[in-house]
Length: 132
Image (cartoon, rainbow, N blue to C red; front, top):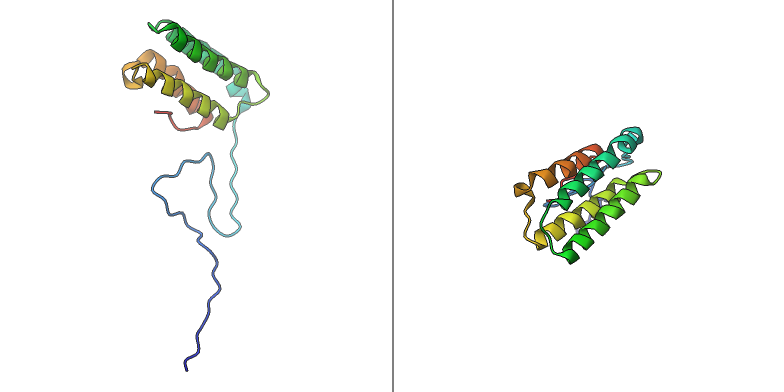
């Protein structure tokens, strides 16, 4: 008989995936991650960018139901911005919803520069990926 050697597994301390999206990430033994968001800049710039997005949406020729759904999302975005702190994840999900609704009515963000610019600026402020 041969003796088996056993090794203690320390677990997988690497990431094995095709696609990873995260605001912050820490990998490894006793790893820690943090993110600093300058809320002063957000509180000053975000309302103006939301107004710019609202104006751009207002200039589109949309069916009344589509316009109402988009306005509700922009209202959610506005309320999130007026809260004590705009959570990047929450704002990102609202923006993804807006982009998804625009795609459903046939508007592609790469063709809609006036719409894409405020969204690009918002995601840049928050450090989140573009929703398209």
